[in-house]
Amino acid sequence: MNIKKIIAKKRDCLKLEKSEVDYFIAELVAGKIPDYQITAMLMAIYINGMEPKELSHFTSAMATSGSVLDLHAIQRIKVDKHSTGGVGDKTTLIVAPMVAAAGACVAKLSGKGLAHTGGTLDKLSVFPGFRTDLSLLEFESVVSKTGLVISGQTDELVPADKILYSLRDATSTVTSLPLIASSIMSKKIAGGADAILLDVKVGSGASTRSKDQAYTLANTMIRIGKSLNRRTHAILSSMDQPLGYTVGNALEVSEAIDTLMGNGPKDVLSLSLQVGSIMLEMAGICTDRQEAIELLDTQIKTGAAMEKWAEMIEAQGGDASLLAQPEQLRRAPHQSDLKAAETGFVSRMDARVIGEAAMLAGAGRKEKNDQIDLQAGVILHKKISDPVVAGETVFTILSSDPKKLHFAATHLQTAIAVSEEPIQPPVLVIDEIF
Ligand code: URA
Image (cartoon, rainbow, N blue to C red; front, side):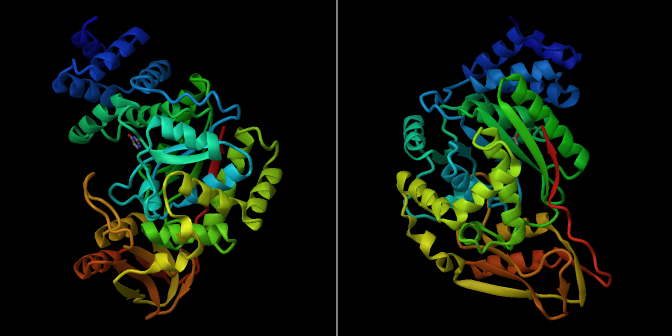
């Protein structure tokens, strides 16, 4: 087989055979393809796309390009969720313990935040000692013991994605739909998931800003999952404004704790219950949505979900005592309030701008290896459709660095708009796709 011929086929819009895709990925991981040929292939995929069957072969070859987690010893269905990236999206912190407490097995590989979006691993690192770098054996051991594990991608899993992603970043091919879909799904499959729920975000803070783009991404990933014998469902959820009232690592953990204590914001609870109930159905624990929601509600009311979260934190080497002191997570050396300039109704709470402001305050990374400030972030005091009076506080910004606080505050001024007329809040869950 010849790499040049494979690239030429893709350049000419011809469909690659399984053997060609397998060869390309195997040679890629073996370090036998120079970067100029890999990037030529990436650009050909970016321009010409991939047929469903070809994409399924490509994803499968990526998923098996390194180690694959073998969780067969756990008899239950392993269910995972994936969000395509949002602002203030702390649902994994709520859903994973709730669903595991209800009897499902949740083995989740998560990522760190980049640019304006947050990452679950950063949020969990507020618990002193918590390890997000479990080896595959440790990962398997924690999930066997507790039914719940959340850790980072290891170098052994999907090495093809690591190579391709770094070159996508350098060649403006990150936004290619087949490359995004195969990147996400290969990691879910290598992570041992039998069932995968995708939360595809739509709106200003999402990578898919339009509903059309989000539907296409969701349907592409569902098709890949099903072709590889994984139960795969998706929801489309709004990311026109941040989820809940907090953006930033420690702040979001405190809001997740509030939610599991029964005092969380309505939108956070509602999305968590919706996502969690679908996961319970997919895991075969419940047969109907109402039964699943009631079971999840019981995990909150009895404290079982909080106990499960604490069990996971401890199993991964962390100190779970912060779960009992969420107020400790809302502190930072410097804080400043931003006031509304007009009276009326909030018509815009731009998720992207707020995410960027949180990043400028120190909560996120511009570059992959940037250090983050766990305390930094933004508290929202208003959401879209809320009445507001000129002079009222709309945002509180937190940071350990007064200069960063200033940059964040300046950036945030464009995040809000106020209208004279009342407006409707955005619909949170736009659609469910099976
Ligand atoms: N998340 C991934 O893992 N890969 C992408 O390409 C985009 C989002």
